[in-house]
Length: 355
Ligand code: COA
Image (cartoon, rainbow, N blue to C red; front, side):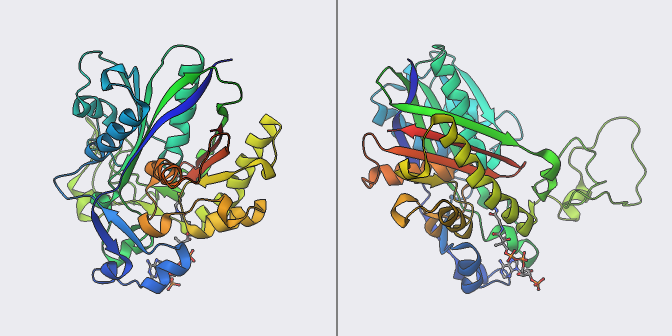
């Protein structure tokens, strides 16, 4: 039976470290508040005007390709997950293809817009392509340059303190080895809560009729009969181009969906919580991970947490954590690895991998 294995992992985290104390210089917050509520101590920011989501993703991808022992022209397909793309369009997939210098093969490039679950969505898509025999080397990248799109005033503090920049990548290949590779993936969504964690501008909804909470507002300007308004000066003036998050609503549903989707994966494979050697949750918030750990009855060395150092890097958080855990020797041949994520959409998902 053909399965998908992770043949190489790469990670890239930009050099610049921004501590909680650094943030207190620009907004009303404190190291204590951030640590207590999120576990975050510091995060990294990409070099402004030098690095982008694509260039960071490219560095992670180059490492993953090298570790997989292949040449970049052997890549059959690219999947790029991010919520902070270089351009509104085209997506980062094609930019990565150019940056990597994959010109010979004109391979397909797909962009995934599933925010914090983007890596698991991408993994599941890649898994289907590989299991069906269509592709032999799929490059999956999760990369985020959040620092360019956050509100650094006190108004944006509930969101800004949480997020950091970084990238992770994997090369996925088919394997016929018995009981190895991706055993199962599970994807879910509930659009009822779309605006609870969202950046709604710019967009085809008509721009200035909505504030950043997704509530309709009347600016007293007449509708324009012909043509749309995608991004307006008024959006900029009203500072409506930042992400918005209702933290408590996100927390409440996250702690419910994480265990649910992990159990779903275990049930689908006839395994149980005690079979998990390492849970690598999307690094949303240390409190969420601790809640999930407790709910499942896992020990500290069965759960990988690194949000303390990087903050929430959205689509990059799972591959960065996976790369770190693997490099440290915490993941061994034959281990059962569980990946799980929850985030904006809401979307959530899980994967079980036999290493
Ligand atoms: N520094 C200091 N105070 C802050 C702050 C910050 N960075 N951000 C918010 N506050 C203030 C609020 O203004 C509020 O003040 P008030 O009581 O005077 O109105 C107070 O802290 C409590 O705000 P609240 O939003 O209720 O805090 P919380 O306990 O829910 O914690 C989160 C906020 C964001 C840490 C928490 O809700 C959370 O972790 N949610 C999940 C978020 C998440 O995981 N997102 C990623 C999903 S992928």
